Amino acid sequence: MAAKNTNMFSLIFSFIILGLAHLNLVNTLSPSYYDQTCPNAESTITSVVKKAMLNDPTVPAALLRMHFHDCFIRGCDGSVLLNSTGKNKAEKDGPPNISLHTFYVIDNAKKAVEALCPKTVSCTDILALAARDAVSGGPTWDVPKGRKDGRVSKATETRQLPAPTFNISQLQQSFAQRGLSIDDLVALSGGHTLGFAHCSSFQNRIHNFSSKQSVDPTLESSFAASLKSVCPATNTAKNAGANLDATPTTFDNRYYKLLLQGKSIFSSDQSLVTSAKTKALVSKFASSQQEFQKAFVKSMIKMSSISGGQEVRLDCRVVN
Ligand code: HEM
Ligand SMILES: *[C@@H]1O[C@H](CO)[C@@H](O)[C@H](O)[C@H]1NC(C)=O
Ligand SMILES: *[C@@H]1O[C@H](CO)[C@@H](O)[C@H](O)[C@H]1NC(C)=O
Ligand SMILES: *[C@@H]1O[C@H](CO)[C@@H](O)[C@H](O)[C@H]1NC(C)=O
Ligand SMILES: *[C@@H]1O[C@H](CO)[C@@H](O)[C@H](O)[C@H]1NC(C)=O
Image (cartoon, rainbow, N blue to C red; front, top):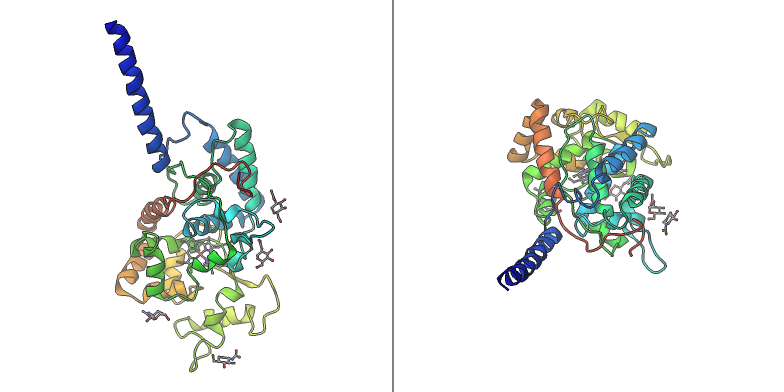
């Protein structure tokens, strides 16, 4: 009888613990989230991403930007991955979608992971891991996992992304709305060590900048001239533009060094040297690759923990 009661007690106790553990899993991310349910998820995703990166050197930048975009709209919830449907125009078909061309990498990773452990690994976790893998050659880190996929994606909400014309107070506000600090802003802007921008993204700096000056005076003059030559006022080349730093496939601190020389691409980059606090951080990262990498990892984990969704999608392009 006593033994039976004890068993009953431990059974009830286990239910309580399991219940709490479950709640905990829903609300908190953990690096070991898939250790029991899909131990090979991470290595499988990494191998798909690495293969795509080898085939196409523009993949890392696109994946890193896609993750940023995902987290800034509705939290990290894979909303950026959803297709438009009959009545709904999705984020990916909204205006600043211009370089989000690597959805296939996430699809391939999802397919590989579904074959291992069906309906277990969320699309937004796959994207967070892919963004970490994209930073290869730079720092690496353990990605906390357990994000859920969302069910809503609206093209109009891409307006909530910070614009490349933003000044420091607008950037600060955009980041603060997502729980991110000025330090996060400066460290995460270092993502612009990778990749490319189309002329339309920095047109404001090189033509008709203000009523007094046609070119942004903070741009170094020979650099401004080179931007103008690839992006004339009446630009017709759809794919014209400039690399975000001089080493666009290497994750380094070059971006910050160039920023101090008036050789950044966006007004938003330049604005990081317009306040004493952000300028000090820019200088710190320009002079220490190690300080930059440490800060970038910390802020990436913070950005990629903004929560959003509620399900594990079967197909990253459609809600369940
Ligand atoms: C601070 C506010 C930010 C603004 C205003 C901004 C704006 C932009 C713009 C306008 C582009 C170029 C799009 C194009 O013309 O094709 C771009 C590219 C890029 N952004 Fe940002 N961004 C910001 C923050 C971030 C963050 C936080 C990350 C990641 C940590 C990031 C990573 C990238 C990457 C990697 C690219 C290159 C994409 C490619 O080559 O495919 N950006 N960004
Ligand atoms: C999503 O859209 C892409 C591009 O338009 C298309 O190739 C793909 O079949 C769509 N996927 C689903 C599941 O609707
Ligand atoms: C970007 O959006 C435009 C419409 O705003 C759409 O025509 C285009 O296919 C989209 N590009 C990508 C890569 O989804
Ligand atoms: C930034 O732009 C906003 C909107 O145009 C303006 O109200 C604000 O004063 C500007 N801030 C700085 C620091 O220039
Ligand atoms: C420059 O900007 C002014 C005022 O914003 C506008 O009236 C003018 O048409 C613009 N010029 C060009 C060449 O875009």
